[in-house]
Amino acid sequence: MPSPFPPITIGDAANGLCGGMVFGVLDLFNAGQLPPATTQNPADPSPAFNYIVQRLLDSFNIPAGVIQYYTWMQLPAHDDQVNLFGNTITLITGTSDLTINQSMPVIRSTIDAKHPCALGLVTVHAADPTQLGMNHQVLAWGDEDSGDSTVKVYDPSLPDNDSLTITFDHTHPAQTTTFNYPGGDTVLGFFPVTSYTPKDPSPLGARPRRRPRALSRTFSTRAHTPPVPRSTRRASHTRGQPTRSRALSSPTTKTRTLPAGQPRR
View 1 (cartoon, rainbow, N blue to C red):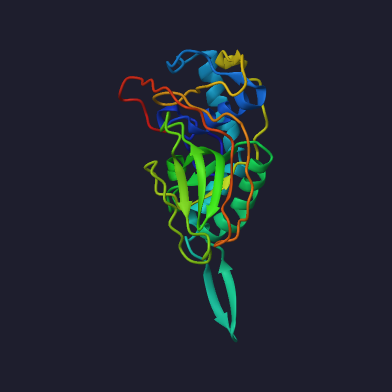
View 2: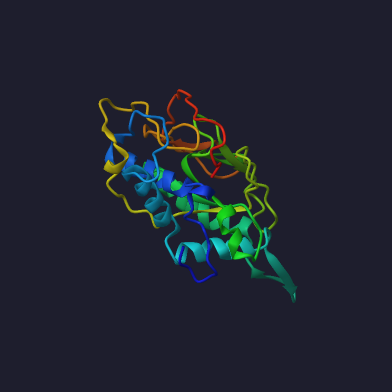
């Protein structure tokens, strides 16, 4: 993949196609279409496979998106601050602060507008650009603020699991925040992938939606499950105040698995 760094194999299917699958789900969502009935991953090459690979590259928004991942990978989890004459001065804003005070407002407003929000998960702290492929992408479809903050996500590496959430204490953003995620990745922070623009998902063999809120699936490493929009609820975001919650409904899923040995990402 061309980038400001040495050769990086982010677009290599051996490293997984999470960003392409997340963008594919968004394309189906915006087109109001169901994915193909098959649960088999598309052959390489095929129109569907080529489409997902291209959407993976789109999700990285080269070069700006790659630089954003690489910048976050090198940041501390906490703010780097000094006290000068009784004033606290922030020298470096950490990934915890960026996630809580910059990412979350965009994610909330996107879900308020009844759209899922693609997220870039930063999962490695390193200056080595070849580690860029260790990061991950998921799709936020709901969030709640009742004490701790909760972001409900669809993870193409963990399909048919509607209970996946990222939870964290948002009250001390300058300190290292623990982002609890059962998806297997150590999440250091996350940001909305705002470069998304819809594309025609017809190479996937998408089908017209026959009824509102129908169950749907999308390509993953094992099975297929995207979110489907339904309704939102609003309340206060202030800690200790009534719960603030809104979500696009997640489908009741039907698990179908592919043979073992598929790459996770």
